[in-house]
Structure formats: C-alpha cells, structure tokens
Amino acid sequence: MMIKIENLNFIYNPDSPFETKALNNINLEINEGDFIGLLGHTGSGKSTLIQHLNGLIKPTSGSIIVDGVDITEKGADLKSIRQKVGLVFQYPEYQLFEETVYKDIAFGPKNLGLDDSEIDSRVKKAMELVGLDFDSLKDRSPFELSGGQKRRVAIAGVLAMEPKVLILDEPTAGLDPRGRDEILGEIKDLYNKGNITIILVSHSMEDVARLVNKIVVMHKGEIAMEGTPREVFRRAEELESMGLGIPQVTYFMRKYKESGNDVSSDVLTIDEAKEELLRYLRRNGND
Amino acid sequence: MSDTMINLENVNYEYKSSEGEFMALKGINLEVKKGEFLVVLGHNGSGKSTLAKLINALLLPTNGKVYVNGMDTTDEEKIWDIRRTAGMVFQNPDNQIVATIVEEDVAFGPENQGIEPREIRKRVDKALEIVEMTKYKKHAPHLLSGGQKQRIAIAGILAMNPECIILDEPTAMLDPTGRSEVMKTVRKLNKEQNKTIVHITHYMEEAVEADRIVVMEEGQIVMEGTPRQVFSQVDKMKELGLDVPQVTELAHELKKEGIDIPEDILTVEELVRAL
Image (cartoon, rainbow over all chains, first blue to last red; front, side, top):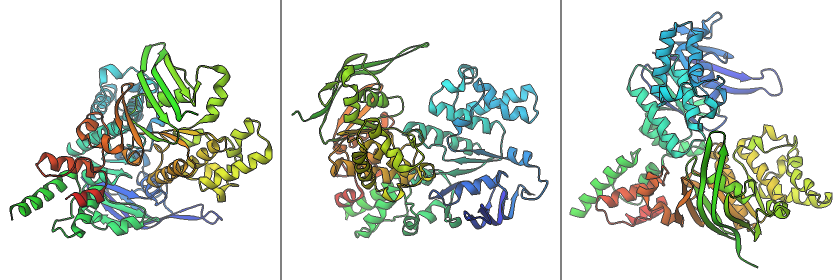
C-alpha cells in the first residue's frame, strides 16, 4: 500500500461565516503502481485532496499514511514526504524562477544535499523523460521557451526529486492538442517504465479513458465513484448528474445499442469501438 | 453598404526581435461576412493570435492590407473607429478585468469613449443581461468563476456596441462548465445580437457549430470550409496536430475497413443513423 487515507475531513475557515466543508469523510487506498485518474467538477475537492497528500494542507481530522508514515502526525518529516510525493500544480510554468533550465530543474535535488554528479545525472534523466534535449536547452533561460517546453521544465523539476508518487493537477490545461498528446505520452512512458504511482487530475474523459487503470470521481467533497475506467464509465447518467460525462465514443455505442443493435457498449476508445462494430456489422452482413 | 466585415488582402506579418525575424503570417487572404460565425483553428504558434491582433489594429501588417468594415487599419485617424467596430476578448480573464465591481468593469469601455452616463447605464445593464450576469452586477469580479469572469469581459466589449467580436482562445483556461457557458454566450451574440464572430480556438468541439472554419498552420491558411468539409478530412487534420470529433474519426476508420458510410459524420446521432 502506498497511500491510505482514513476518515479524512477538511473544513476551510472553520468557525467563521465562510466555513466550507471541502472534504467529507474521505477513505481511499492507493496501491503501488496504480495510475489513477482523479475526476470531478471544479469545486468538488480534487485540489484540496491532492494538497493533503504531500502535507501542504493539514486535515481537520483523519489520517493519511504514506509509505507507512502517518503524515498528519505532529513532527512528521515533511521534507522526506515531499520527496516521496511529487506534486505538479496547474500551470506549473508560472513557478519557474531560475536563470537557466538546468538550474531550475536542479533546484530540488540541490536542496536535498545531493552531490554534483548525482544532481547532474538526475537533471539529465528528468529532461530525457519529458522529451527536452539536454545539450541544446540546459543553458537557455526557461522564460524564452514555448509554453509547452516551459511546462516540461517544471515537470522535470519535480521528476528530478525521483518521487515514488507523482501527482499532476491538469498537466495539459491550456495546451493545444499536439502539446497535450505529447505530455500525456511522456507521462504514459514514465508510468510504463515502472516503479512509480501516478495520480492524474483531469477534465478530459477521453484522455482518462485511454490512460489510467483506475478512476476516482469526487463530488461535493466526497468520493462518489471508484473503479476501473470501464466500471466508472458504465455509470453515465450518474456522471452526467455530477456535471461530468463519458467519452463521446462510449456515448455513441450506448446510443447505437439503444436503437436496437446487439453490440457491447462497454468500449472506451475509438479502436475498441471500431473492433466491436466491425465484428457486429460483418456478422450481420454475412447473414 | 458592403456585406463584408473584415477583409485581409495578401497580408504578411513579421515579428522582429534581437534574435532575428520571424514571419508569423504569410500571404493571408480572408474575407469575413457581416453576421458570420467564423472559427479559426490551429495549434499554438500557427499564427492565429497574430491574425486576431491585426484585425483589431493592435498590430499592423508588414505587407498587404487589413480592412475592418471598409476602414484601413493603417489609417491612424480610423484606429478608434476600428476598435469600436471590432472588439476583442483575450484568453486570460484575469488580465482583462480592471475594476473591483462587475458593473464598473463593464462600464469602463463606454466611459472611455466619453458616452453620457445615462446611455452607459443602459448599455451596461443590457450587456450584463445578454451574458446572463445581471445578478452579479454588484459582485467583486475576483470571486467569480473563470467562465463568469470571461462573460464579464465579453459584457465589457458588448457595452461598446461593436459590430464584430474577436475572441482569442477565450476558453483555453476554463474548465468544461466555463467553456460551455462562454460558448453558449458566443453563439447567442451571433444568433440573437447579430454580431460577426471571429472565434479563435484549438478545441474542435467549439468549431462544430461555426458557419465556416479556417485552419492555420505555419502562418498560412491551409484548410477552409464548413465544419463538415473540414472535419471529414480526418487524416489531414491529424497531420496538422488537430482533433476531430471521436465519432468522425470512428466513421473514417470504419470506412477504411470497407464499411459503406458517409465520411462527413459530425455527431453521435448522425453516426447512429448512418449505421
């Protein structure tokens, strides 16, 4: 077990007129090697939840156990927790600050007190993981790069900490389709290399459907659904009532089935839909 | 009176910096009719924002001519008339709001135009009504959601009574709810208020309902047509790094496998019927 959240509650501005219950009795287990898609409407509590996972916010009540350590206890070693759980915020490029790409990515490892050769190898490795060319970019100012490249530098800065859990809060927000596909591809490759647990906060059902192996849906500060993408996207009506949806191709297969065609509507991607339709249409055509 | 709102004739635009020159637009010819809902698609760096700024006279063409309602954007005497005719909404709502109360923010534009207070009052009320934000008129903008802020920015433009509104990726920083609120408003401006719309985006969902789409790549217009004509060219769109609706792509894949269906499917309902 990587992370175990038990009876977690969080209240913003307690005992004031602005009191808001942001998280309501959250119980969640995240296993080593999970790739989780965290879905939910704006204001559902997603960001509040992920900020708890590396100790940026202290819960009002409840416990969070990361790799065997209860991080909500007094005196918990937050430094080592933040090394274990890397958090990439929304629009992380706004947090770049150093003169060069190299220095920016090296900032975290340097603060860990690592020696220069270790820092060097980590920066190289992190840049490679996000598809940035080390030799041509290391001495450039991060501020003169394109939006997509800036974002990669920011993600590399977190990867250089070699976290066991990587949390990304809408890493593709504001990117064009090509930039989105590139970043998601890099995240997928990183996951496939093994040894990492990923939590991806996203608004795109299509992206989540083809990437993750588990989905957690939040609604009004609670966990409303949990399961494989197939299990979760079967519950289309419930998702819609929460202001979410299902991938268009899944929606199509449901409609097609409803109009009297004997197909499985349990598809998540265009490829799966194509296979299922070809099977159905060809069999019918041969009758 | 001519029925052309915007006309670009052989427009080039070159950015110059210490590191050299960069040709952002190359030989653009584009005519936008009055009342048209035009979507400009293209990925980052394709030149679409440069195009928007040229229409608003924030940039002037290096070569060629840009006309807004017949006015040449290089004519300095016309610059305020041009900006009054073609109002612009930008990507980041936080960069466009200047006042601490919603209705004061919306009044900012007409106040600067020297319009008399009673008329400003009328325009502000009407603009807020159109974007459906009347009940927030006394609120502080920074406490609103992204979609609400962007609608306030649109109301601020509406209060200046432009005939044409240019929106430069107004939804890029919004969540799905905010995006659909803004798109609903944009469609309403076009259909009910008869505004000419130039909507710049990289979200293909927003282009499906346009009258016409132009696709930009490397500073040039590489595709042009109705949404059906443009999206049915699935391979070309993918090559350009752009999305098509999932059902359009599915239809395209099925056709490749020899299934007899039309290629220009745009919606779920159309595909259900076609199969």
